[in-house]
Image (tube, rainbow, N blue to C red):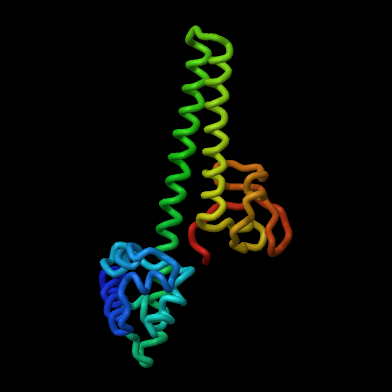
Length: 203
């Protein structure tokens, strides 16, 4: 997906509708800085406002993602390409998130062990020792909550019984027995429990 091309297309369509960046931003309930980022190719509109944006610009979502008005002859082909590109970008983003999850886990564990080691090895008042250990455990719990949330939402779990791929609830991921990213959970499709692996792709 060519963000520069899409940005120029948004700018041209906005001008056709005789709107400034500020006016378009006000209609969408966002800042004009966000519109500027779209038009310079630094970011893409969020999916939650894409339909509304297209309505104001008098274009389709397919036009927007293509960076041009799509003719009826090429409509299905362009739709398929855009859909594939959106899926690819989601998979890339999920891979990055899962890498961040690993970094969070390693750093928070290292910090916890450091606090415990300092408290155990250095002479200090018991109250300070307790405080250091408490800080270590609190940051570890907070970090693990973020890490589990990332694991829950990035990618899918695949049922070992029926092959169904799905995004589980935070609670089911948090409470499940696990080895790494493989968790023992109940599949919402076949209702069977199995060791389910984390995968990136929906298919």
